[in-house]
Image (tube, rainbow, N blue to C red):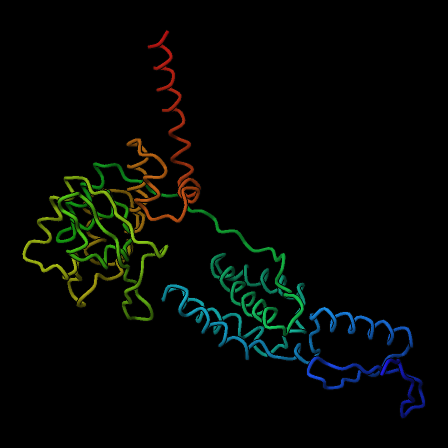
Length: 361
């Protein structure tokens, strides 16, 4: 079988072809080489790939991206939170499929991916662009793992960076003022502002999750809205945690839970049924009224979680304790998220160390 072999085209031009046998014992022929050396080089590369198991059939490069998308998304469905999965599906339909769905996986170049990312960055937010890149990258990396593609063209793509918004932190007094103005939801404000729960975690909190004897909230579930429905799932980092509760807040929770059964939700929505709704600072409703009447700076309900972190940090709590309270995956994540707050505490550290020095002198 070793070649190359010469042949003549219909136009009378001399060309070369090579033959080789695949692992399944089928014979392949590659034609059209103008030079014998090019045919020899190609056959040498194929032989090496066949011997070390890295051979990829050139026809695999014609497999369309859209034919692999369903498999990629199905693989994600059981491994990510429902809300994030819905975001991946939406991103595929609205951004990735339109541009890459009909392309063969082997025809996509890195420069094309980079140009697409850059163009999309001019129209959409950094988080949307990053998620779109995650989808196409995941599909192509799956193709690599399945032996359909030698390497992914998504390597070393420059992505837009998320711009961290300036956070609003309330004081303890402002949290109390906001709670007083929040009508039936005053206890919810206290839990968010002093305990640092995510809104989805507060929405999924049940009476049996409150340890009144030890002053703890056991965060076991999170409830998020996914395509007009509320879905109960594990907390964001997939880890349940125990959150310390100030006595003042625990007394309010005790009042909140009077007459409720163990499986009842601690906080319920007023008009639409079972779960608390999505309350935003700019929308009409109890939260908008509370912001207006309390006079505190405008912030979202999620921003109250940052306030809880701020209060805990300034109280002198260590990083590991704050990490556990907030449910961050690592202490490094806590430090990175609230670097501005820890930096402001450096002056306090210096003052306290100086006091120790003066007392010892």
